[in-house]
Amino acid sequence: MTAPKLWIVVARCHHALALLVERDIAGLGLCLSDFTVLEVLLHKGPLTISEIQAKVLLASGSMTAAVDRLESRGLAVRRSMASDRRARRIELTPDGRRLIEDVFRAHAEHLEQAVAVLDETEKQQVYEGLKKLGRSVSI
Image 1 (spheres, rainbow, N blue to C red):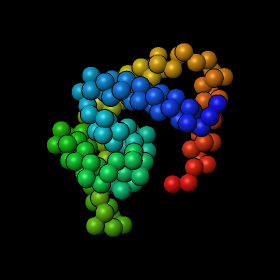
Image 2 (image 1 turned 90 degrees about the horizontal axis):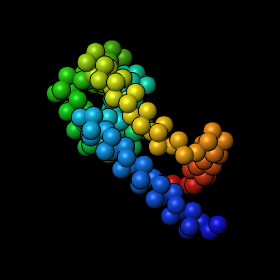
Image 3 (image 1 turned 60 degrees about the vertical axis):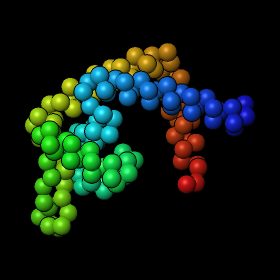
């Protein structure tokens, strides 16, 4: 298999899964950037905007807009940090935690259904291969 052919397959697979996820998340009442911020806060705990940005790969302006939307909906709050009063951590509110726990559970189930065409060995091989490839590429 040639590298260009592999690239096309990876790109098309990513595109198909991305469309599935975006449709899924929109059906649950969130845009993808808001979902990714809520999801990282759920799994990593309170973080600064720059820490969230590094994990979810959103541009700075998109991050601020997402946090503003989540805060206006009462799903997240900005809190000053005792160690650095200039920095602010973003935390889930109880309503935000309830929402993302429910939404993430449904999202995970839909992803499991999408990848069910692969057996466990194939999933592991795809995971290891893509991880190895991603780590080898210099950005």
